[in-house]
Length: 249
Image (tube, rainbow, N blue to C red; front, side):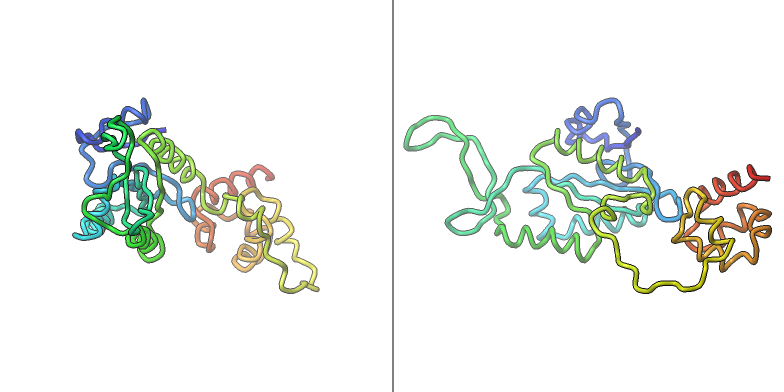
């Protein structure tokens, strides 16, 4: 696991929390970035930005984070994640966004944790709406963390998630399996029955393979370049399939 991080002074705590997997560099965008696997086994770049509460509130006013997203896109980033770091609450009196601070309680004259409005002043609803807009409209993965240790854990979890191709994630499929809309009364072809046994293809992709090749023999003789012409099959899957098929011969 290697995660490239910003080497700026305000990111030293994050670098320390990430430990040996962090590689501090003067990266062009984000506070952390790493490569992952996208659709069709393609290589993607994931860009992670960490924002403290006050900093993100300033971004709502001046649009700086959107500008940072544009720069990240120009520098080749494919996936964007924002980690909002810090504890917050809505004020019970006026709905302003509040953060905890240490101060002297005027009633007890003892030092304790108190709540005060974040600067610049922002309502909780506007802050939350901004996060929703980033997620829903800009396609940014928005995460919340209490402190830098949790931020580091989130970055590691993101890295782990993007080392697996999207079509290999099965958690949601375990929760929901779409019903069959119709029953096929035609017996599946020999080609489809062969293809469904190949690792990485299965029954869902067997139709596309059967539409591409005229026979089992043609499929068996095909090289990687021919396999990647089929929709939904990337280079890594094609190489694995060709190796498996030629093992039969």
